[in-house]
Image 1 (tube, helix red, strand yellow):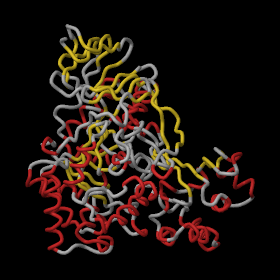
Image 2 (cartoon, one colour; image 1 turned 180 degrees about the horizontal axis):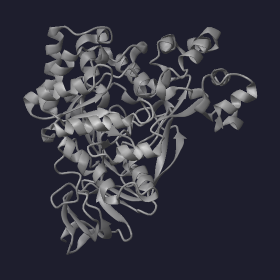
Image 3 (cartoon, rainbow, N blue to C red; image 1 turned 180 degrees about the vertical axis):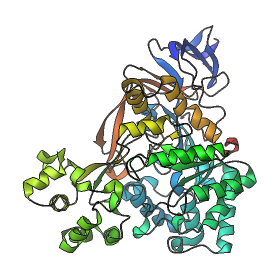
Image 4 (cartoon, rainbow, N blue to C red; image 1 turned 90 degrees about the horizontal axis):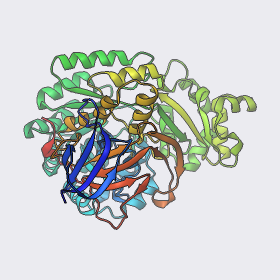
Length: 562
């Protein structure tokens, strides 16, 4: 037999951006052996007639760091063509973590990334590691369905060195040197870079700023410089008041490493505000500074309950809520003084993306009041004869804080989204897969891009869209053997129907540890997903069981971009 597997009769979109062509793909030993003409027999032949054969998607922005330890399949990303996930974004992660510090990590991830603390505690069990190196070794030993790559995160590094004081103060010179050594050892073990956050929206343990926000710039700069000393790695940051263009330029001057930031969202800083950032992108690119903003192809839609009011936790008046238990939160929500503050804080002069949120929110689910499901909150407020904020809080109290509300926070003006998607140098990302599980689900971003923006809107060609999902992130991270259908490269492949491919509507399931819930979306028109030559999914069904050896590899930073 010439090949282990041969995919025949499909339209090849090879990830380079060049024009599609009809042909076959031959695979041997998990690698592509032929593209175009694949003469000879194969042990298995896959008919791709009428379908597109393309490289698997590389998802640059996930938070599967914890989920991967109880869900080796990394669901739901492979459902939508993802064959490589990048974890450890925004300075978060679960390693290194001393056993005495685990609760700081759990409670931080619960607040800042919307992860259920019950699911984390149950799913992680005894964890089984403390150092970053031990964590990577555990992932390799257990195996994963898709390939995984990890940043080492600033916040767990700080917690490991400073304990609870990481949430309280700047680090001493001695502590920074200890952190430097940890970053170096993580990069030597295989981390693909260093991530951090300066975002005001990132609050964690007991409502305090996440540890990376307590770092002064010299600390962050010193840690990022380790990548320059080692000649490898990508710097990733969620931007904030003291972490943006000026700081990026200084970090690049020290390290010489690519920088990618989260997130260039339309409407986030007001209508048309993205244009300023596109201009800055051009300015820095012309000066040879590789700053790559991450952009989203879906509206940023958040679903929340007042049991977990994530969109509001950055506001000062919500600090008592962040620190209270369920009964304490209910008492706060019933307080007229709190309600008055809530209404005043979200007037037209305040946070743009949440201005007038109550007038735009939809009641997505109200246990015991099913007739209200999918009712605009403003409509229910009129029926009750109260302000929408009062209606939201009253319904929350009536449902034991279980009522859910949905709101599009940003990225919902399609003309503006099309501009950032089409801009040179932006990185299509922001699935946030593994995080905010009960609040949102953007893991289907790739099938949404291919269906909505390519087929329905005609905003980009299929060839360009596939390249943006595959070879562009591969080049940024230095995954030299991924992202293109070329002889010798890894056989990470998706096969889909270009006439049907799409993301199905969200649905809620209870399949997380401890019976916790999450939102998922099925893939439409995704025929097959293959990782390193092994078929993971076919026609919407897993092809490997929990007992099978899984084909995903740990992609280490030795190959990181130069």
